[in-house]
Image 1: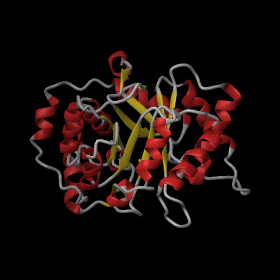
Image 2: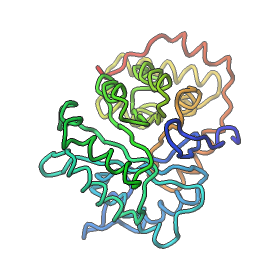
Image 3: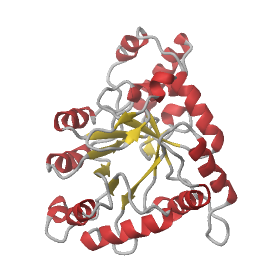
Image 4: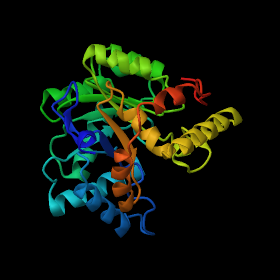
Length: 310
């Protein structure tokens, strides 16, 4: 446990992170009838602040801004605990899809107003699917806005957070970003981000790997992977993996988490947490011993048939 909780500096940044970071995409959902966060969300934020995990990951559009609002309320009430960092993301305008220089600034300003934090250690460009890569780098584009924020000292490092590996590769090769946040592309059942992680290591770019459970299928909740229904071949592979884990008396979700943690190119693995008790469960999951002899048997199951194409 101690080894996995050791802090490390994320390459390309001054940010300190533990092996696991906390995701907050559902923090603030469901809201109360008046649209404000429910008291349970505040309890979860308090638990996150009290947990041993150093980085809390959010976004301008998570829970329509309520995720940042809940975290900001906790910051204003209790202060941000020593050793904790909140990282957020700029998002396209929800009404128009605009994601240019001006929208980056507005998104940043909305986020810091909610969070009550003047300077962010890391700011990601999030899911830039409404624009072409060329638009992002053009004068007046999103990258200009991000660079201005960093040059003015309002942001420590810049990240790109998205799904498709081909898109992430183009942003990584640009030299404009210090960090990559990939999701659902480096898990037990999809390894396509391996080349992206290697590229990042070559260039001194830090890597956050999100969704090690693939949205639930590797944690035993449902039959979807990366927000889509898993096909029969993938379900059969997962069943074989679960049977192997049973023979070793190791939970499948412990293996799924450790698969990400053991990659030397991943600075931190982001796990979404929806209830306070999950934080303690996550700590126990990290501490689950997995013998080295287990991994060759897992590899012998063959390449899993991912449902993703990029």
